[in-house]
Length: 75
Image: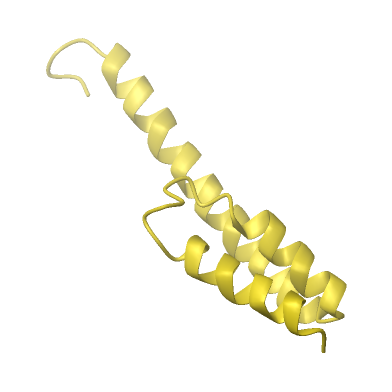
């Protein structure tokens, strides 16, 4: 296993799990690094987790937007 790719994965995992990536977008290069390493199962798991976080975040924002449009007492 190329050490530089392993180091890149370690760095991206730290970034993805930190407050430095508040939108959780580091999953994209992290999944790609796992793919390049040949670990397709891990790459798929990272993508599924990352997309799940993004969808949950979108749902939360939509809920806030919808509630902000409701008259007082209705939201």
